Length: 93
Image (cartoon, rainbow, N blue to C red; front, side, top):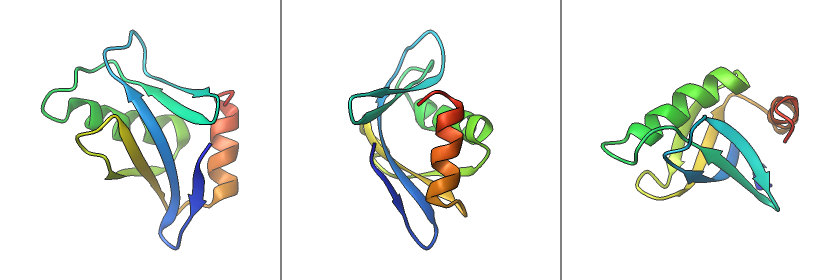
């Protein structure tokens, strides 16, 4: 799992799989996979990731890289590495 702490918060590298039946986070080897229920059209997947990740993990979330890619980097603004790892652990990651 690629988690890096910065002055702005914590960066998390993810891989997105759209058109899933349920929004969820999952770890596949060393990669965090986010299953999105939306189709990859007009930023719908990105909007869902920001909204649902924020609700599930309890942080303000921004996508800072990969807006049109399945490989993305999320920024959990104002969080530290320990807090993000604890939030992900609650989701059994």
